[in-house]
Amino acid sequence: MSDTHFKTAVIGDTASVSGFAALGLSVFCETDGAKISKLINRLAANDFAVIYITEPAAALAADTIKKYRSSRLPSIVLIPAIEGNTGDGMRALHEAVEKAVGSDILN
Amino acid sequence: MARLNVNPTRMELSKLKKKLVSAQRGHKLLKDKRDELMRQFMIMIKENRQLRAEVEAAIAEADRYMAVAGSVMQREALETALMLPKQEVELEVGVKNVMSVYIPVFSPKYRTSDTSDIYSYGTAFTSTDLDGAVNVLSDIFPKMIRLAEVEKACQLMADEIEKTRRRVNALEHIMIPDYQETIKYITMKLSENERSTTTSLMKVKDMVLKQSHNFT
Image (cartoon, rainbow over all chains, first blue to last red; front, side, top):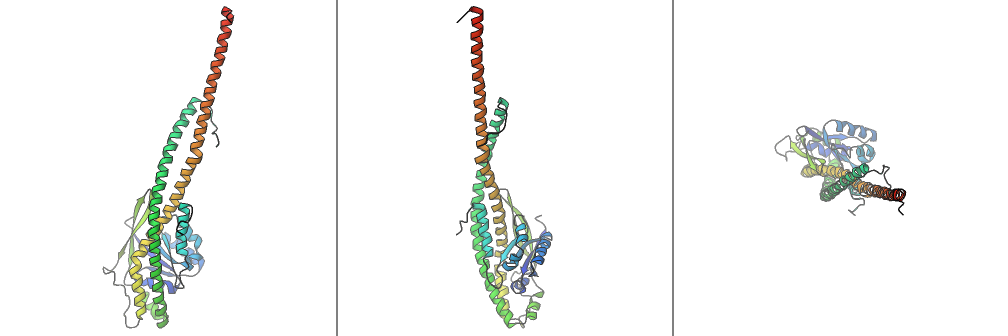
């Protein structure tokens, strides 16, 4: 597995993600929940190791993202959208701590 | 505590004793695994938190630049500028084993040798804010990759810690006490049987002696 080359994707609304295109990431502008879920499934099956997704887009496809939490690839990372930070990304971190430790010790 | 449903025989007793020993050894090992995983997890979480704060701040800055660029440039022009990227990133994915949790390790490979060669457009018709946005994103990108790695590691380790904790608790509070109680029960039963055999033998001896020698 280590010698295969993987790709990186960014999902979200046009304004938030277009900047990433310059870095050479695969950018997908999508704002419809069902389409985002489908897209994530498709990317996961097609050699995408890291998927950055804006927080509002992630909120629309929460179930699909949860599904990939326990699999090794892809790593789905929440990033803030252009409207501002909703704190969902940090919340996911707190959830992981709560799951492991039994209580949220970060606060 | 529930006693296991077994026959009180010596064979069961020795079987249970062996099981108890391996359960106790397993409990100790799993407990050590849990403690070490937890230590590593705390280090990861700390890094994750810091990286996330940095990445979120950088993306917010890039978004600010993008918002300004979007207001001074036409949308079409902006999209055209970013349409054909010069740079391309591929990830090499390795695996790291942390206490039997296999976490991915990403190492980015860039198409162009110069990682700062990112501007896919001429600067004549684009806003400088667009340059700023691209620049900020490009600077933070290695950290974003590391964030993806660490975040995945945290999720996988959290799952594993939860599983290990459940196993430790099941062994500590259910299996080991059950075995101990059953062993105690069988030992008691066996010694009770022994005592009863001894008393009946004594009784029989008395009877035989009485019959043969009229011995009282």
